Length: 306
Image (cartoon, rainbow, N blue to C red; front, side):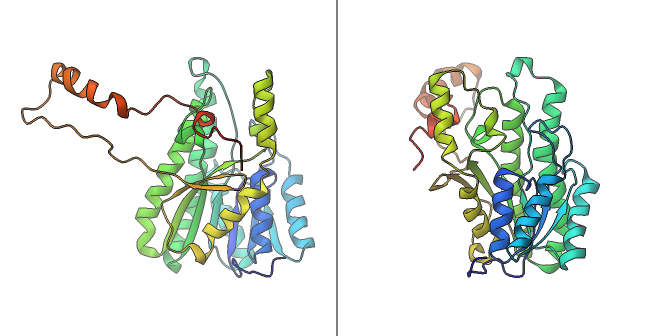
């Protein structure tokens, strides 16, 4: 246990906490004094199956170290299950203070081959799941006039990636959801932020390794352990970050990047209004140098992890 009790007395629900990033966050939150509901459905990377052992192992790791934790095996995509996560926190620990929306699955398929079921499944867990758990906690946060959300987004949505239209749409949607929560609930002292993690996990483990370049990329990602995500997450959950809300952070090994958010970068005015012809003549040429390149996440974060 840490001597610093930054989360002392706080009750935290961490979804998808049986493995990887969620596991690291749950354990560090407990080390910093939090009482933790360890939620994990126990499914595969694709969301199939249900194995209770991962969540129970995390609970045991926390309690063996002197912390307090209980397991929850609900599905974030189900609103009743999400409500039960909050009730488990309240019945076991007397309240709810923090939510970490981390649960996720992948159904990577190139867009023109992606099925509706593959799209819906990813949206249901990532975006709808983040809504479900956040919405279940919101009335209690409003009543107590405090609370903190941390949601996991991804540069797949913030920047782009191949074969992940469903995942990218969900993750960019989460950024919008977080921003809206931050705006709507600021009057109640509630904060909401996003972390875009670079870390080796089961989901990242699905990256192809058929070429030397792909294998080298995976080798670099493997250096970025899930535990590296836990420290900024614990900070954002704590009262130390009371002035930070509606923000997006990329965490990449030992780097923390505050990300920009969409703002106007060029503005053109025509007092007579616009026609397709005048737009083609004036707007198209004027904005060429300011267009956002069609880049992938790896093109933007092109340097080795620090």
